[in-house]
Length: 300
Image (tube, rainbow, N blue to C red; front, side, top):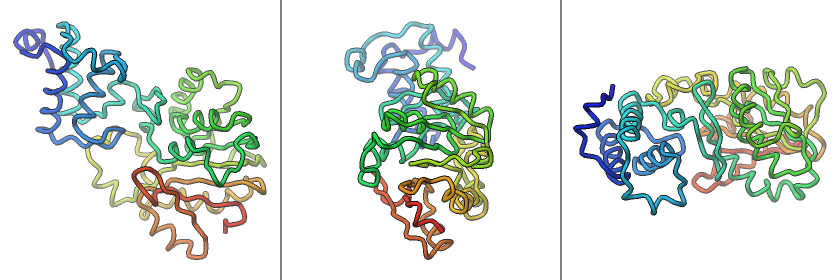
């Protein structure tokens, strides 16, 4: 607990000082950077600047700006929560960024992060030849709604269904849909995968489902303990949800439809479980085999 006396005795004066201090605390406490930041510098920079409501592009102008006592107390409290309590920065800020898009998030929902966002930025080319011809998109396990919102921007004529089993997640997604003014394009649906979708069919299905194996769940860094376990764990081999997608998605794809699914480190498990399926593994900026794509006629 940070007291006023702690603030008065603190020698930190500028934003530069606070970022340096935060980095040191993060290193001492061995935080895990896995929620949008690559290292302790990025983590400190993100936490301090956005706590002060400063834009990243303006940061150079404020390095040596002095922080008030009230600001410093708030920053020290957040640095302590990040370093000691291992609360991920996006939860402290109630803000996460994905391909230059800010999204609201809190502990009701998994923090937005997905390799699929990069692929959407490129309009799923070349597998989707004309984004304007995509009429219906399904985002399964939507969480905060981030991928569904990005998809609605990328495919300008599409109606997007964002589906999640968690009402808490859908409540957060609703905040983001409204912030992006997408209420007329995006429908939020509570459903256990396809169960409540009837006979709806889609040109594009995207999903970043739970895919963490039980062994990995047992050994997750402390930061992930703050996220809903429902959004992470997927059984012994991490494929509990993927198996259902493979079984049920074919009936919900149009003839030209494609399905894009993120599976983390599950490539070998997927190929072992479905040796006859011709998975296309999509390359992203930092990884080559975290996401697969299948056309309707390639599904089992």
